[in-house]
Image (spheres, rainbow, N blue to C red):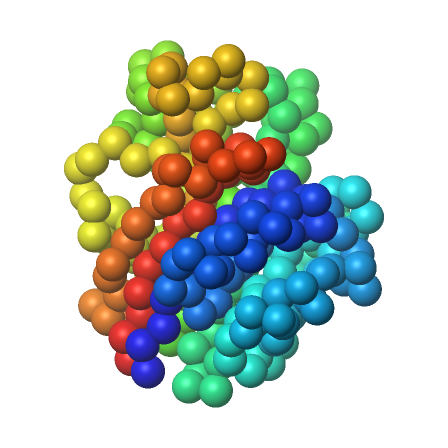
Length: 262
């Protein structure tokens, strides 16, 4: 079975349902994992997506913020929805396909503006969330699994527009990178995007605050696709759809894609 998977922080699925449809019509995608849906599950516009072949959904939602969903052409069995760090937020959903592949979709907390867990409760929550992710995958070794989502960390120097200037900015600080690396090591996860595109500067997010995001190009790679080590050799075709940032009323994130061949 070969299928294409995409992850996208949509920043309101109801507001941008038309953009989701545009993506699904333009690209050969079989599963789309969304974050920051900002919608209760009962108000998720599944009927809109069913009309173009995406009739299967597992999701957790909240009114106005957070929310994660997996849209699929194939039947899905919900596996878990874990409240990491006990925040009461809809930030994780996991589902399994008929071929046994498990897909984890995460929306890691952004962490606020101050990279100090003593002064900034949101940053402390972010690190706690990552620590509980690490502990979970230490206790539950992933097999035949894919982990995707807005992890809100750009771990490598090539994942930000300027490593030196970003070193003390939340999303690229050393402590966040160390915590994310611990999650990756705990599950023996392989960063599929960087397996395919190891050295090139890559971004999946550009701030709304930039007057001209193209000209300044001050991006960060916050959105990720990982594979468990047993299936990582069967992944490839990584792409980041930069052009989506230029669509009308866009999210500040763009879709990240990969292909799994099992």
